[in-house]
Image 1 (tube, helix red, strand yellow):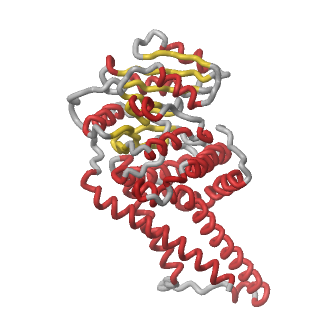
Image 2: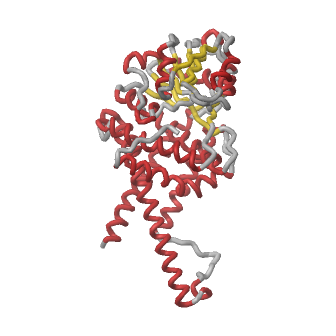
Length: 413
């Protein structure tokens, strides 16, 4: 009876997961004609003035390359300002950025440490541009990225914020290659959520806002160390449109060790749940559309579903191993080994469901890679993502739930 109960919960969760995958794929097929990966060509009819804020804290190794990538943008120099805000670094960051002191496009600011959101707010207060963007000091932009974003703002006068396609920069380790495919998959979902007005985060790497956004709803908040999630939800609660500009590419450095990845994703998972609770008045409210009915509930309850499914699989694997061990000890290894038949294909319900999930997942990955890279290129990262992500993700998701239950905040690093 207990097993029937837990199996029933599993089937409900699997149905919801399958429903959402099909929902996003249907959205993709409706949007596929708009998914041009080449971007805009030629000059724009109007170039809005833009300020890009680079908040820094102990980024001496990467900040120079970040600024150089911004200076190489294909955008009128008289329309672009770059604000470098050193948030009380204790390494050589301030000394490194001095090389840009005489560049008329770059302004350097130094302040006491107060957290990333205070550094970005400092830049916003000193900006008079029509568009205000942010770029993390470990990220690098394609030359046409701002051109693509400005074009999107010109096309859609109701759009209040634009987010780019984020790609892992030069992955070297297994974990970074896994993250590259993960980011490709995220690129697919962001593009599908965009026309549904259901985006829940304006990420630090190269998100842009009309300056009036901050004048109407205020500046960034600490927001459980996930200020980019909180601002997006605040904008959505005020019905301000956030759009994904998938042809604007930015490259970011992915954590290269499991511990660094764990710290980053723990902050994201915990902050995501806390911000969802802070904006719980939007949950299951039709006035907030797909965001309130699907995206936000998924952001919160999806963690429970993921961990339950993971626990169910682990439990049955352990039970199967123990059962096989008993069988081997009883009848011997030669009799316990299964007979291999080249025509054998497991057709029980759970196996077929697993094949369906794998197939749909590969379709999503395929199209995510095409969006981010312009064409599909098979890579070892896809294998790492499929085989490893479901194993490592429960580590930080479980800890995030524990922190949520016991009200333990997470640190930035």
